[in-house]
Structures are given as structure tokens and as C-alpha cells.
Image 1 (cartoon, rainbow, N blue to C red):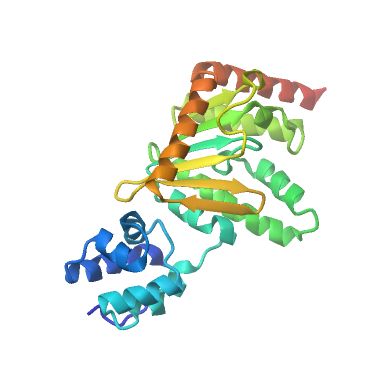
Image 2: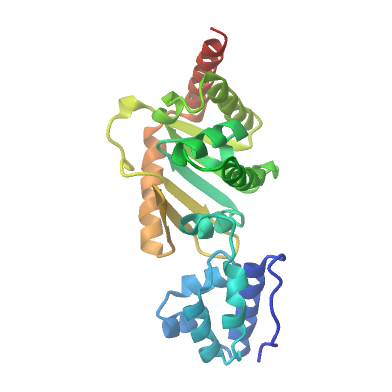
Length: 279
């Protein structure tokens, strides 16, 4: 039986809880698929719980305690693993993102969060919450900038984005902010840290006119797809659904400009913004 201990919320509690789940499951010789069947979820979902890429909710934790005979351990500790500094609709995706080895993202409206500068992010948050206090905006900004630190690692995660041309043309915060935002992106491209493509208006209808896509793959867990709208987000682990969204992303990259053409366009737009800044 798993020992009766509480997890420390400051030391990656979700990963610790997942490791304890794997130990408890293997102790009784049950496979991920068998445990998933008992919980009415997929074996992939169990794998994601064990890898720490999915949140364990109380009702699932209670059933796990019953099935694995762990004396309430998971029910007691799932609260610590559920704590997040991100909005509820995005918390699981953000925490999975931090563990991903590959992230592929289509951005139809704004620069992806991982690529945003401080000034650009502040303008986005202020537009979304025009009556928020400066303290609230500062907190959102801090959490956003914490996410961008993922790209400070030299190679992992591999980040590949497709930017709709509207992302380049929509002025967020004014020309100086846009010019700086594009300089960050082109710097990451030229340093070979990210891959970026632009989907031009001239392509017309495309495979993801419905909205954004984020695809994440992991070293020791099945892939995930995250679809986001205004104040809402859905994280999918069903293999067929993830495969369908992966195909959509592949179609987007096929329709987009090449990375070289995209870099030239982004730099051209950045130059225009810099010129407007001094006009």
C-alpha cells in the first residue's frame, strides 16, 4: 500500500502524484489499459496522469484509491496537484506544455504566448480585460513571461508555429510594440531556435478556419491537442482526435509560405512598423 504522505505543492506535485500512481498500479500488476477500463478512460489517459501531463481530479483520484487500495492517498493529494497559476481553461495545457518535447501551434489572431514580448503581452491582456487593475495585469504578465522561458533552453521543446498573416497585420500596442515583437520572432528563427511559417491571406480558405491549434508530444506520454477560444479551451488525448488535428496542422504547413519566405515577410513587416514608429 502506498504510504500515507502528503505531496509538497512546491516540488512538481503533479509529476510526483503521477510517479506514485505508476508505482501503485505496477505493484498490483495492472496495466494502464486495465486501469483505464476500470475508470472508463483510455489507457493513454492513465499514461498522461503518470507522466504528469494531465490533472487528476478528485472523483478520479477517489476511484483510483478504491481500485488500487491506496487508503485515500490520491484523494488526499490531488488537491495539491490541481493548483495552478493559470486560468482553469488553460491550466492543464500550460502545464503539459512545460513537459512537451515538441510543440506545434497555429495562431490565427495573435502571436503565440511563448513568443510574445512583455509589451505585446501587456497590450493583449489590457485589451481582453480593459477594467482590470494594474496588479491583475502584472500577475497575468508575470505568468505569461514565465512560460516564454521554455524557449531559453537551446533545443527543447522543438517549437514550430504557423502564423496567419492577420497576426502580422493586426497592430497590437502600436508600431513600436509590433516591431519589437517581430524582432524577437526573427531572432529566434535566425538562431535556429524555432521554425515559423506565415499563412498568407492569398491562400483563402484553409484547413483551420475554425481557430487555433496547439499540438504537444512528449517523451514518455501520448500526444495531446489543445483547441482554444475566447475564455475557453479543450485538451484532447483521444488518438483519433489528436491525429485529425495533426492532419489539419500538416495541411496548414503545406499551404503556408516556406520558412525562408516567411522570415522575409516578417522582417519586411517589422521594417514597416519601425518606419511608422519614427514617422
